[in-house]
Length: 308
Image (cartoon, rainbow, N blue to C red; front, side, top):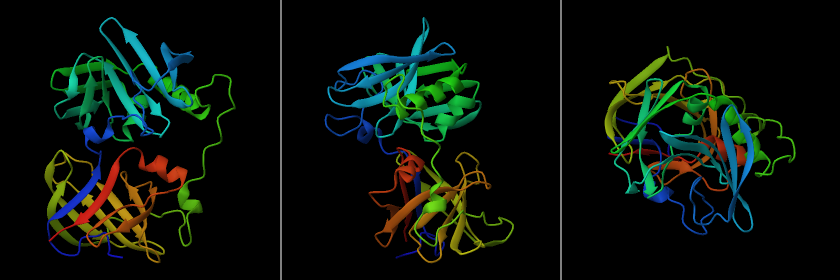
């Protein structure tokens, strides 16, 4: 299996990507559901209320589909929540139809790219996985995609986020089973020789290469620097955007099995992203991952490519 790291100063297609919006749009029978106005939803129930938010659970004729927290005010109505896949979404009531222009999602000055899809009643968006926590913990959010442009004060979103998670755990049924204990991080239970990942020391730096990092929506110059791996880990590299417009991160893999991948955005904590496969140029997560790995990956399409 090829290494996922830069081997030479080549063009690098590095993607920690949100999949194109057209691929995210829920289609009948695909197991994905929009958290607002999905045609497959037979009925919606009020699961509970907290801090001014109403949390709704949606159901098809057979199964649980999603939980979403809604805030309805005269100036705007919006939702955030998870469907059963689980994929987290953001929705605003707006008459836009079709794919929105590519725009931005900002919480307290931290901005990232975003696009959405409108059905004439709601615009559905699929921000990056970590931004669910940003909504829960932030103060002010702004979404700007062409004419779809809103600012929202984030009041009570922490409690609403917890209520949504409880709702999903209970399959949308109020008074259901108590939320299950938090799962053990996969790094503790992954196939040997996986263990709790130890962050490489960014002070011990090797070669740096400049290339192009690309996503479906943007291309930017980036730098990849090899780091000294820790413990039994065999490969480590830091990816940065010198302009500071894109989030940097560190990737580390296991020496004995390079298909096991960990990623850190804060240079302190790792997230285990499971087993990855390679076609000789690009690596991507393998199918049939553990449920916790699926949750760690979120709805994003992760891929790392090395090109000449």
